[in-house]
Structures are given as structure tokens and as C-alpha cells.
Length: 393
Image 1 (tube, rainbow, N blue to C red):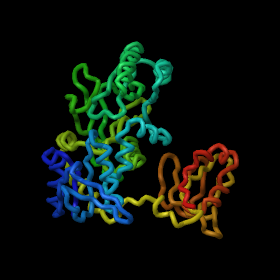
Image 2 (cartoon, rainbow, N blue to C red):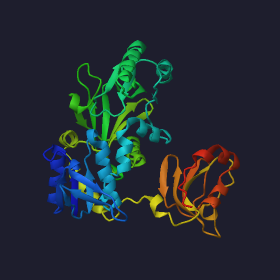
Image 3 (cartoon, rainbow, N blue to C red):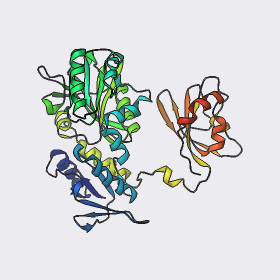
Image 4 (tube, helix red, strand yellow):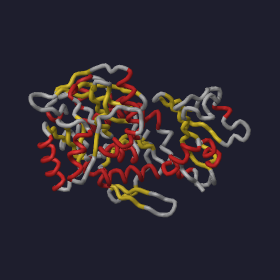
């Protein structure tokens, strides 16, 4: 495998460990400065130049995109995708995770724990927003902060108002978030690779500092996560579109609360703490997946007139409740069920004999008109403006 690591810090711990792990496994690897690429576009031939020379062929790309170059770095990753190169984290996944508001918006529609959060721009909305998340104390976050930078704890409503007003006067977008008191000064970092958590640590803040980031002096200890925390971390990464991620969770009274999902998580703190070869796990995952680059289904379906992908809900009392999947469209085979979502779990390629239950969701590919006919009338009127489908005609 020929691997490109996109990084502006070739001597940083994480980049060097990833490079060494690839070399130990007899892969060819190069560290390429993300800002030294030029993106060339012409009909049918997306191309990349590196340091004024046409880029040689690579089998896979491992992006390490810093927050300061998110837009350009993501553009480079997207170009690799259009060239058919496997990218362990996609441009879409990186974009989703880098914006705290966007990531929480995506996670909020799923049955996954997140702290109560609100986003406002009008001064008149600040006080009601603070009350809606449970009142002071509240956590105030810059939407694009990293490593604990731009995360503030306001002990009183007055202090929160002052902080938000100051940040907004500086054209900063901020989130107001519920303070999870039972998790004060500590959090969990779960390192996800593919569909499993390969390592986890608990970070504990020191002194009066409430932020537990290792960069802020927090101490770390290796831990073994229970199934609920492991499953939550993996689901959060997958929902945002990431194969490699550092998922930060608070230990709430009702279970894990996703605080942030990082698309370029550092390796030094967690490898030192757990003494595990996380870099090797990442390289092994890339090697196993290199023959399966990300496919944008919207691009592949442009010739399938009248076909697309849609999500069908099965509310209580639906005609589909109690029906086997194979009996949804037994004659024409115009509808293919790709995934069944039940009780917060995804079941890919469900058996035709599996019987549908209330509150199931089906991700289907097929004729859009046939799928529309399966949506209950009341639900259809309510959801039509938001129907999650990819039209192709």
C-alpha cells in the first residue's frame, strides 16, 4: 500500500508514529504538507499537483487537518476522493466534526446522549436560552475552538451574559451548553478506529481548572469502557462520517453525553496512557479498507431515473407493522432495504424474514414513487418538506 499522510507537522508525535507504524508493516508512506497542494479541475479529470509537480498515484490518504486550515485541507481531501483514492476520514466527516454546532445538530436527531445546547445571535435571546439549558452555571463554547481553547464556565447568569456579549461583539459564534455537574473536571476520550473503540482514557482536570484536556494540564488514566460507552462512541463517529475519531464524552447521570468528536485526534496522550499501539491499529484498518473508497451515492445514481435512496419510518399502527421485510414489495422488487434501524442499532442487509415493528426505520433504495406510497398519509404530509431522499430524475 502506498499511503499519503496529510500533515503540516512531519516531526510531531502523531505523524511520526503513524509513519513508523506504516513502515513497520512494509507499506510505502510519505508525509505531505497539506498547503503545498494545487487543485486542478477540468472535464473528467480531477487532478492534484504537489510542489508544482503532478502527484504520483496513492492507494490511501490519512488526513491530519489542523483547525486553522480546515477549508483548504478539506478541499484537498475532497479532491483525493474525486480521484478515487481511499480517504480514511472523508471531507464530509471532517467538516461535520470541525463545526461544534453542526456536529451537535447532526447527532441531535439520533438517540444518542448530548448535553442540552442552544445557539443564539440576538441579545434578547440569551437569557431565555440560558434558562432552557437549565440555568447557571453554563458552559460557553466557541464553535470552532480546539484543545479546550474557547471553552468557558460561567458560574452565574450575569457572568454568562457578559461573556456572551463580549464574544459576540468580537464576531465570535458561541454555543450555550448545559453544565453536567456530576462530570465536573473530568471526561472520557474514546479512540475509535473503524467500528470499535481501540483505547480509552479518563482525563481529570487539576486545581481550579474545569477543562480536563491534557493540553491544559489534565491527568489521564487508562480505562475499560462498558458496552454503553463503547457503542455510543462508535455510533457518534459513524453518524458524523468518521472512521478514525477521538470521541469526548461526559459521564452524565443518565449515561454518556457526547461533548465533541475529533477528526484528527492526537496519539501521544492516549498511547502514553494506555501503552497501546493505536497508530498500528489505524494503519491496519486503512490497509484492510483501501480497496473500498468512499462512494457518493448521489453521483452514482444520476442515470437511475425515478430511483433514489429514502428513509421510511414505521409508526405505531402503520400497515407495515407486523409485515416481513420480504413482503414489502414481493412482486416487482422495486424496493431494496439496505439497513434497518431498531432500538438505536443499525442492522445492515436485514433478512427478508425479519418482521417490522413500530418505530423501526428503513433505509431503502428503489423507485421513489413506490416508497412514497409506503409512507403513512399523516406522516407524509408532516415530513414531505424534510424527506431524506436523493432524487435522481
